[in-house]
Amino acid sequence: MGLRIVVAADAAGVDYKEAIKADLEADPRVDSVIDVGIAPGEATPYPHQGVAGARAIAEGRADRGIFVCGTGMGMAISANKVPGIRACTAHDSFSVERLIMSNNAQVLCLGERVIGQELARRLAREFLGYTFDPGSHSQANVELIEKYESELGADGASVPASC
Ligand SMILES: O=C[C@H](O)[C@H](O)COP(=O)(O)O
Image (cartoon, rainbow, N blue to C red):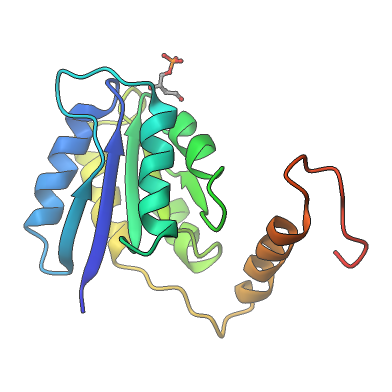
């Protein structure tokens, strides 16, 4: 079974999102692409799309996401508010590799105002090529992230003694 990918963007990232979406739809590794917006010409604040895209993954409708805004940072911050989601901006090949292999992240965020479109498309392609190894030493670190997420209160006030 191939990957189900969700794409998201705000007005500052919609051009790259459209280009990457077209790439994904032609990629044999991809089964389906969900587009949570925005469409070209729209203007919705990025947190709405970041959270909508992250929810698609958290609810099991998509496996991974590629979210684009001006810097990639607002999308990442927003997506990470959805429990279970690990999203980060990465603008180089090594970081994209580690985003999966170290962090088992589901979401790559890109900044249309920061990198060229061809690099963004390349990084999106590379992102799909990695699969996290749950037997690697990094699994313990990912589990610690999950442990903090489940044990910290919504206000972040209670730090579990076991962590
Ligand atoms: O991180 C935020 C994005 O870069 C967004 O596209 C632009 O946000 P701003 O208009 O608040 O700078």
